[in-house]
Each structure stands twice: as C-alpha cells, then as structure tokens.
Image (cartoon, rainbow, N blue to C red):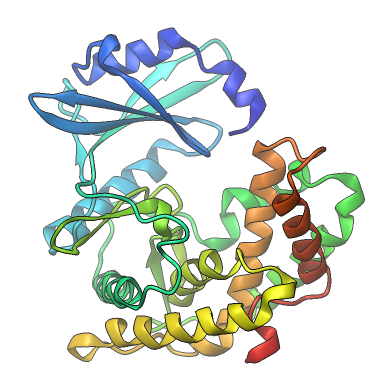
Length: 330
C-alpha cells in the first residue's frame, strides 16, 4: 500500500463504508491488502469481503467493468467470489474523505483454503486445475461483450507509477521498462491471443475446496492484454523463489508446471493462445518489473532480509539485462 494513501484512510471511513452495506462496524476485521484496504465480515452465518479502493487507483467506470466481468464469469459457470449489492441496491458506494475518496465494494468470501509455499511447488494436480481454470476464463473472454470497458495493459497502474516509486539509482530499470514496452507494443494482437484477462492469477488469489474446485478472486488487476500474460504471471510466482544459484530447480519447476498446466488448458478442445510461447519471456519480464515497482512502493527496502536482498540483486540483474526467469533453458 502506498504510505501516503494509507495515511488518508481513516477509521470513520471504514465505518461509513460498512454501514452502506448494512455491516456493523464491530463486525469488520481488517485482513490487509496490497493496493486496497480489505476487511472481512460475517452476516447470517456467511462470510464476506469489504474492499475500499482509493479513487487515485480506479475510476467508477473501471470498477463497474470489473464487477460486470466477474458476474459474467459466474453466470457462465466459473467459480469466482461474486460481488454483492449495498443497502441501496448498487455495486459501488463512495466514501468521501478530506483529500481523497474511496470506492466501497463487497464480495462473497471464497470457500475453501489457500495453498501457499511450499505446498504450491511441485504440485502437478494444482497446475492442471490452474490450466483448466485459465483456459475456461480465456474461452469466455473471447465471447464477452462488456457493458463497461477496462483499461489495457499499458495503462496498468504499476507501469504508470514506476517513475514515482523506483529510486533514482535504479534508472536502468526504467530504461529497461521503456524498451520492453516498445517491444510489447509491436506484438501481434488477434482475437485468439488478446482479450480481457484476470491479470493476477497466483496462489494468493484463489482458494481450493474439498472437491478440489478453485474459486478465483481479486480481479482488481483485470485488463486487456495477451492471454499469455495470465500464464506468465502464474509461472512467475512459482519460479521467482528459486534464486540464480538454483537454476536447475527452477527448470524442473518450469517443466512440471508447463506439462500439467497445458494439459488442463487444452481440455475440451481448447487451444492455447497464438504465439504464447514466444510471448512468455517478454511477459515474465513485465511481471518482474511490476513486482519490483510494487515492492518499492509498499515496503521499506533499506534493510531487507537476506532472501529479499538476494532477490532484489538477481531481479535487477535480469531486468537491466533484458532477461526473464526462463531464458537459460528455453
């Protein structure tokens, strides 16, 4: 969370937002959030999420587009954390602060449990289910006729804010971002490789129930991009834990993920996106820069722990040299 935004969000704003959804303030439990303020609450035995989004991050139209996309997926059989309406029967409420507004939305709590590290590593059953979910989502995206339009990849907030958060001594990273954006802008765009994606599928953004069904949530980063970006993001978060000294382990993880993810994606005759293999290294590099911007925005990196220190060193090397996590074994 941007420290400046954090200072502007007050308890009374959380209470007002809760009241708009008929939630007693005492029922709210703060659970965190990287870009938004996220609370949980329980009503009539069911769990829900209450989300506060700063007006500096999203527009009402962008949020309407997000909710519309989620409802469309739910109506077509994808297990997602569905939005619910406020007391006034609307999906988005606005709480006005002194210098900023926060948009309030609420969602059903995803059933099941999260799978974290290291359980998510070396897990072919999980990867096949992720492939099936991603393939189904992309299949529906090709048929989707939006009521509201989300932004496209080049308007991603992390990319727009990169110069505000990356420190001066890391100017080569900004140069690498400009080079990468120019390269991406020249990629082919077709109905079979580009459309509305989730934009942040990873083990932190889905749960699995006892029947092994995945419920996907946190569509805050949904955007128009290459479908391969949804693949690259999942792959990135399974590979970045392996440092430059563990490349052999990284390759084993890559091979296992791709084998089982592709199997799930191609079920029921689905085809992987056009050009996805060629796009994957570029989109992995894009995710690396987005993660780096987010870390500089939200964390104090002046005295990192050992893992973070080593990761930042390796990450800078890859970004400034135009490398992705998989270049060594493609």
